[in-house]
Amino acid sequence: MNNTLIERVRCMFYEAKLPKHFWGETLYTMMHIINLSLTIALNSEVPNKFWIVKNVKYAHLRVFSWKAFVHVSKDERSKLDAKTRQCIFIGYAEDEFGYKFYDPFENKLVIGHDMKFIEDQTIEDINKV
Image (cartoon, rainbow, N blue to C red):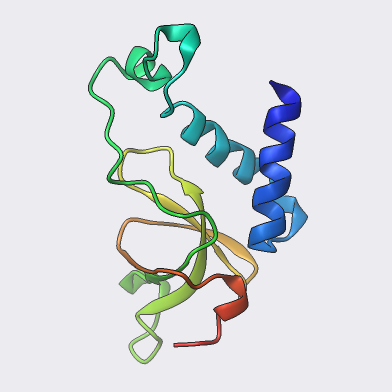
């Protein structure tokens, strides 16, 4: 299982072109996806169904490394600052509704609930609107 995880994380890194210090976030995202996948070891059930004991939902899933515009709260910006920041989706937040993003301009991790995903655009397209 460890080699499988490392190979998957390596593939995600190669495609996303993220800084290597995000390997832990990438691993966490991969485990989130694996826990939502059917497994023969559990008679074709989903592991999260046993952990959370409720029906598993898939609507929140997004493609790793997609570009997104994340809302910047009022307490983090001044009146004339932009209301959104361009980020790259890198995973799922600890709570049920949040996502984790990488802000390449400020080189930091951002957790957001209010965002707009731009499908088919990645970190290479970060300067495109």
